[in-house]
Length: 200
Image (cartoon, rainbow, N blue to C red):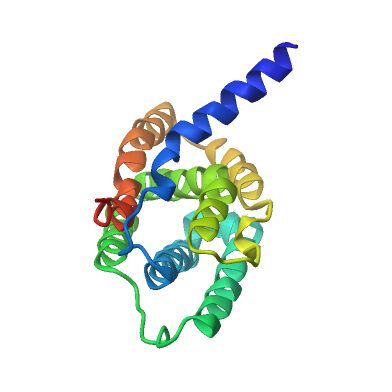
């Protein structure tokens, strides 16, 4: 009974979080959705690239870290551009470019903060992606289930690597990483602008 109640609470929480998903006006169309997925794809790709550039610190993430979702996003973008006219010209939004610039700056100036921001981005999206993407597809009358909604072990792999890396950290480094998690959540919310700007 307790488990059932917990599941109901979680379901209600998700409904509350995404209650406005079907309240978008007609400005939120399939093209906007494609751009949202392109943004996600480019951000995940940039995180992987920055892991590789900084492989002296993140080598384990380069070889054992998250990677599967990027492939699924790419396949979904290809599928959607095939059913939406004149969508081949859609590129990453300014929100995406700003966030990528932010990640690049962190990777150069404070690698622990970059790691925290990357982890939070992965974790938060993976926790919500199934409900979020399915709700948008329902609103936009996209019948096919997107591959990006499937479970992938990216976050589990990330956390495995993170545990390995953090074993060598000093107390200051651990505190620095933990302190960066809250700011990381605020920063990633820039992508919700896709939805905020089209509400009536």
